[in-house]
Length: 372
Image (cartoon, rainbow, N blue to C red; front, side):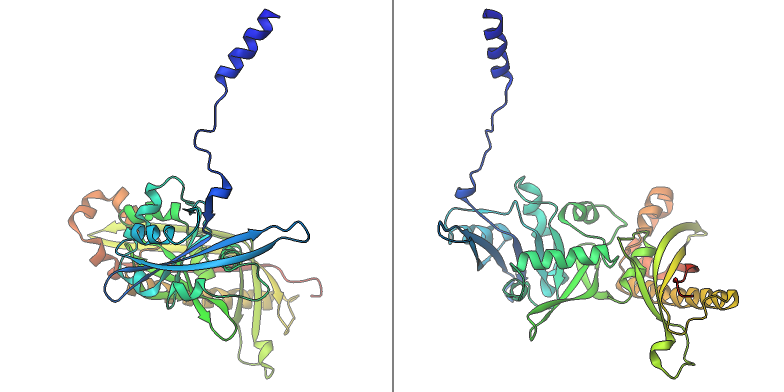
């Protein structure tokens, strides 16, 4: 009995306690946060705070409180919000961080500094730029949705699954802001006021920590992701492969990517940087009204046509990112790592828009439907 008591006491001494416990009833969970730049240089912070009301007689109900405050810094704006709400401002469950276009064009690093210094912040929160004001997006009341935070986060998750976005979050952003030779892109959203909905416009291109004002449109974002070697659960394209059919629908082909292989080779010779990006796609045709896919000659012709069309689109994408001076392919990182002598004697910001980047896309139809 004595030995048993000693064992129990020893175990009790080794048990850890929850010294940093925070009671749910003592905090206000903020699920979405938006930042906008004011004309005088100050910031506007808009937050959505859900409140669940429980009833003994019926089902629970949820109300959403949206607050907007101003401050000289993000932390001051947060303190002003904290002074307006009952309990304590808690961003640990924040799902999305939105930035107004004007603020994003200035500099976003000071906005996120507070998120990296506070361990209670959620580093998995998605990031997006709003064409207009972030406040307007957070104040939306989309129909058939339980809340704007859930709606925006699921919208962004949908773009990740459909290979339209990398899923940029606060944690990933930290390394991209600090490491030289790396730029990034985040979803660009616009507000459909009549429908009270958001629209995915494409990917906003950043140089260092500022939005360049240039973006990859939504019909080209899947190709950009594949060129970077990224594929979500689904990657599909609809391309015009002919002009010969009177019925316009018959001129198009829709396919899904089954397998993709990407390779990028960067060379520095005679102080000239070249990058060759090659990509091979194994695809399945999911819509092609013209049919006749049992013919090997027809398939070979379509493979060639699709390869040409995607290579042309890849060239357009590269022209856009070089015009924006946004090194989303991280070519500068490769040069910095493997050609340090060259890196030291050039200014990469001035060099990147002028380097030669050559894409090549090869398409191979491997599945074409059960009726063919």
